[in-house]
Length: 96
Image 1 (cartoon, rainbow, N blue to C red):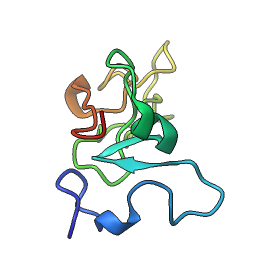
Image 2 (image 1 turned 30 degrees about the vertical axis):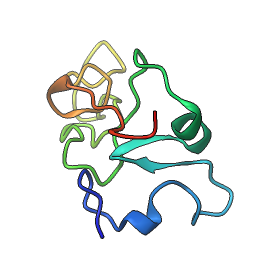
Image 3 (image 1 turned 135 degrees about the vertical axis):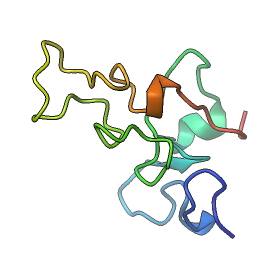
C-alpha cells in the first residue's frame, strides 16, 4: 500500500524504520513522530516530505532560497520559505 500524498510505501512512513531518527513522513508532511501522535499546532507550517509532489519545485521543499537565485531574503521566493508548491501548506490528514 502506498501513501496517497507522497507515493511511498506506507511501511516506511514515520521514522520507525530509520534508526536514530525521530522525524519522518506523516501523510506527506515531514514532522516529529511524537508531535504527529500527540497533536500538532494548526498554525505551525511543517515542511513537505521530500518525496511529496506538492513540494516547491524551486527549493525542492526546503524553503531556502536556491543559490542560483539572487534574493535579499534567505527564503525561497516561489513558496515564501515554507517549502510547499505555490505557497499552499498542507497538514497531516490524520493523527489528531
